[in-house]
Amino acid sequence: MIKAYLSSSVGKKQIVAVTGLLLVGYLVFHLSMNLLIFLGAETYNFFPAKAHESGILLRIAELLLASIFIVHIVTTAKLVIQNKKSRQQSYQVTNPKGGRSLATRLMPYTGTILIVFLFVHIKQFVFADAAGVAGTVNDVNLGLYGVVSNTLTDPLHAISYIIVMFAVGFHLAHGIQSVFQSFGYNNPTITPLIQKVSTAVGVLFAIAFSSIPVYFLLMSGTAG
Image (cartoon, rainbow, N blue to C red):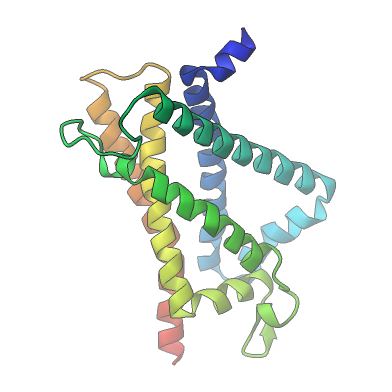
């Protein structure tokens, strides 16, 4: 029975929905930590330092997060392939009468952007030498705060980050709708409300994340 469920379209959709919801939970946590950057280097660096001190607990958390992410991507890919095989029209072809939202139509592209961004983001911030040159601003080492500052005061990096954050918003907007639809909450009364709320949440996340590069760009302009 479990094998049949996992191989079914409904099963895959629900797995994508649940793993997506778990990733949204992480996204909320990640955003809350990122917004501490407005309180200065000492406050922003406090929690990452404590996380690294936890040792094995941090490794376990990272492994769980990576596992959820992989299951989400692999299951989504299988679902797309299954949908393509089950109908003649391509999964990405837009039906003008179908009422598909912009977030839904952009889903394959925003998903791809986020996967690429994830690897770049890890390289830039997780593996950066925060105690060295990468974290040094005006001859003062500011740790991870300095890494973020040095990265996002570069206009190209800042603008790229903002574009990706709006891709996150679109992806999130569609993802929230999909969670409800995957578990049967899809009717003329509740669906329009879900669409409005999910769009609002996606926009809020995009703006909140984008405020960080905007802040550093303004700071660098003021300093200049």
